[in-house]
Structure formats: C-alpha cells, structure tokens
Image (cartoon, rainbow, N blue to C red; front, side):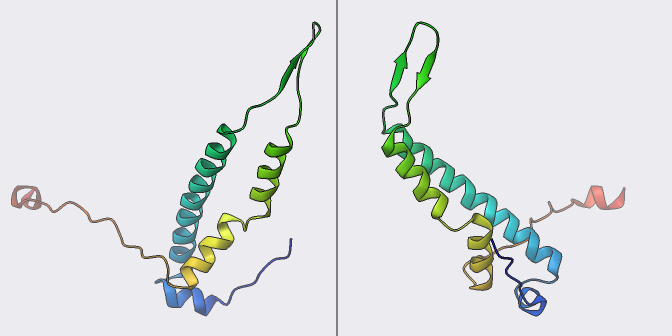
Length: 109
C-alpha cells in the first residue's frame, strides 16, 4: 500500500493546527470503522455456517458466501482514507465540547 502525502497547508486550512486535524480525522475514522463493523456483522448473521462434527474434533468449513462478503469488505477503502477525504472535502463538522458554566459562588472561591 502506497503512502499518500498530504500538504500541511490543506490540513491547516481545515483546523486550527495539524494536531487538531489529526484528532478530528482519527475520531471520524473510528466512527466509520464502527459503522462498517456493524454492517459486516449484520450481513454475516444472515449466513448459516456449516459445521461438521467428527468424533475427534469439530471442523468449520469455509462458506463461499462468507468469503465473498469478507473479500468485499477487504476491498473497501480504509476508514482512515475515508476520514481524511471527508475532512478535506468539508464533509465533517466538528466543535469543541462546551465547558459547564460556573456559578457566581464557584468563581469567588
């Protein structure tokens, strides 16, 4: 797999600094990975696994439908690539968590 270089200026145009951009991309990549994992598991649930029981051991045979689904998911772009394209294409919006407002009593203490 080849390394895809990115201009730092393009990252800086999307966030205040490079570290913030990387943090946003990593969070988005985790979200995408979770979505893909859920979809993968849902599709595998629909397929029955074939189990042959021998007296000595239990063997699980490779199901061609399972392999087909697995190969399909392997060919998809990686979550980090998708997250990077989302950030650079302005498809991701991010904000800082708001800190709870202090009451007057807390400010005087």
